[in-house]
Length: 422
Image (cartoon, rainbow, N blue to C red; front, side, top):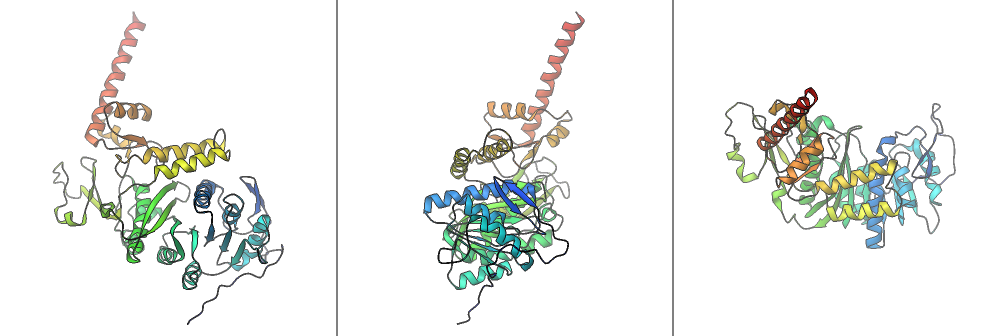
């Protein structure tokens, strides 16, 4: 039988990196000091690391075990935090660049030695796909696999699905905002099996494109994936999704379909495979090019509300919520929970678009949400776009509400002016 071996780094203590331009830089995150050397590192990605650690800790609590594979570890801060905060039993930290070895080793040694009988971590330097494939061939499966990749390299999806345990977690990444924006439809088709065209909620499309790619690859292997949370961050941009991998085909295939957007009326609809030949919009628009179709994509929930509740509770226990930076994490988790309402469809509506169609000034988001709730619609803020709402209210009714709100405001201002003049 063909035997492929990983290439572990020989255990060693701190030493100066080979690059003459390298500098030792100590940084702190959640109380952990670490060096970044010449590795690529973003402070802004700390929230994504927070979410990953919370999810990993919840897995450890429910399964009483946690083996993590950090496939593209960079300086090793994620690996360090999985060891120190999620109490991982073992972490394999891999990065293809061997010159990062001393930096990674120095950082992980803060969590204990990586060699000996009771070692909790090991460092490897190889292509991520090779590491994942070798783990699969050895039947060395992991509970939690974190792939913090760049661009839209989806080649790791199938190998990651082969290396993760059933009921395990996959934390996937894309930074290809150009494709999610519909500017490279042939590229998104090759990478994720989805022909994506420009839509007003392109950043949510980026998340659905990534999940849809995983859905397709999992189906080939006889598995299905369940999104636990989906996170977008503008820096990069970065699209991150946490998926639970389960045996068997997805019980609800309607969540993998096409999305249409009508630029004339502003409404979006999901289109199943068997309805592709009858694509149209309820507004009966005959304007050429008014109907935009992308897909197939994941059209189901982006988050699991029960899982997010566990994450928020754990964040509170750890003191990660409250004032300062904790306020932002708490706000994000609460917004994700609001987005988990099953009545909410895919996509979001930007209030600037509503105001433009209504030919009025853009209204207060909080006021619009309040009116939508009073009228019986499901509605929430979007964690993806600050001035946008997710709602099952059609665009025409949103325009009506905004116009009525503007008329009410104008009437109140007129009454106030009359009082002043009197």
